[in-house]
Image (cartoon, rainbow over all chains, first blue to last red):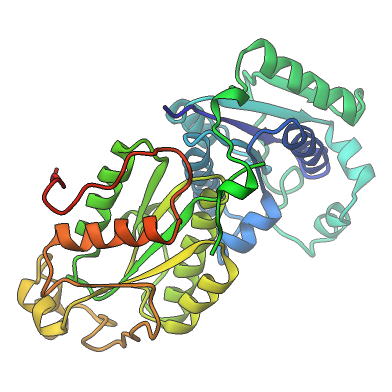
Amino acid sequence: MKQNGVILWLTGLSGAGKTTIAQQLENHLREQGYLVELLDGDAIRQNLSQGLSFTKEDRDINVRRVGYVANLLSRNGVIVIASLISPYRAVRDQLRHSTKNFVEIYVNAPIEVCEARDVKGLYAKARNGQIKYFTGIDDPYEEPLNPQITCYTDKETIDESVVKILHWLEKANQLPKLAAIPIPSRNEFQVM
Amino acid sequence: MKQNGVILWLTGLSGAGKTTIAQQLENHLREQGYLVELLDGDAIRQNLSQGLSFTKEDRDINVRRVGYVANLLSRNGVIVIASLISPYRAVRDQLRHSTKNFVEIYVNAPIEVCEARDVKGLYAKARNGQIKYFTGIDDPYEEPLNPQITCYTDKETIDESVVKILHWLEKANQLPKLAAIPIPSRNEFQVM
């Protein structure tokens, strides 16, 4: 009776464009009638991962935890968009192999581009030592070796990246069947 | 467009019967075709809350975190069964008021009964000081003042508690619209 959703896992440097792409994707898919949840790095750190640091060990715990929640949702038909740096390859690969319908999306921009954007002012702080363990500066980012999708956000517009992802999903037959989700009218369901 | 699930929040002392009731409920609802997820205290500590202690502060963080995940699931149509001691009233009440379709179920057995059962041998350890911060021994349990359902597991069988919950849900129109199959009577109910 139940169908799987899909986990769209956006990995990449800070400033590469993960959140922007994630939000556009979310809006678009929700408008189409899909069940969608966006698990964004910052919100996750507040709600699921208070107290975790940015050491490799804690980052891996964070990624596994988001993967656990993403899997709970996607196995109930939800399209999950997870947007977090997730810099370590091994734990990403673990998730990719231990969950169903995991789509690794590499949001790829050269670090010089990300640093020039510096939307949150974090690169400046990392450069002058106010922030430690900053991915790309004094902490590693291990690029995906075999992502299903790569968005080159220094060369593509956000729209182009979003459309690329949507087309991939459609072609790979990875979107849940909308018609299979029984959706009652508002009147049928009574909230107390 | 989308329908809400429901959060069945089982609170009570260790040994009161939360997990047993939760598992029976899960099996039954899943067989009926509902989307169900069981968030059980022990599994949660492994997957979501590694590193949290049993101080009031950390217990509250744990409860909020489970509430966050339960809400993500239930707002996508899933019936969530959360089974955890959750000894503090204030944070339970917070969740009850901040989430939709939150049903507080008090799994109630006198501590003497729970201690006599001592399924996991934890009361013995708490009594001789091997475990600290043990709810009911050297840590408080604040009873729900106004739970929607109370299961008296010292007087009712597990089946009776489960059927009580199912009947309450049906009467309150709290089950998502999926199955039109009537809930079985006490005699028809099959323990798995």
